[in-house]
Image (cartoon, rainbow, N blue to C red; front, side):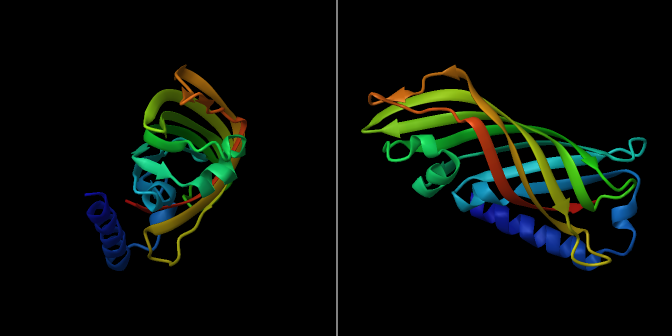
Length: 198
């Protein structure tokens, strides 16, 4: 079901881009955007969010989103969770909730550079040797990114971004098969988002 959803998302963004009639889409004072994070899709999961930039707040944008079912490979553990390297624990994010507030350096436009605060709530599943544990963690990142529209009449955009911050356990159990999964303390994240603006 997830692959057809992703294909439908790509089709919709392409359709909207080809049929866009206004060249000032990105200069609206107020807009909605639908956005996805590409990382969960790569690992069998999904991600979808809604971005809103209100008319009266010329520089500010707000994002809420949900993601999940991402079974991260040992490579991702090595890169983003090096304190858990070689522990033999399979890490899956069964559900994630996102709230972000961003400040766009250019007023009254969706494109260009922004800085902001990004909040993740992760529901984590750990497995090792047939045993399982679950815990919830909270990650807060100061982030920066750049929203880029490829064409003048293009509502489709790419949004590469990265951030640094902190992660801590909220609740649950982090020990599985006598091995403890450690939260990062210091956390960082980089990703490529894609979406389209109404």
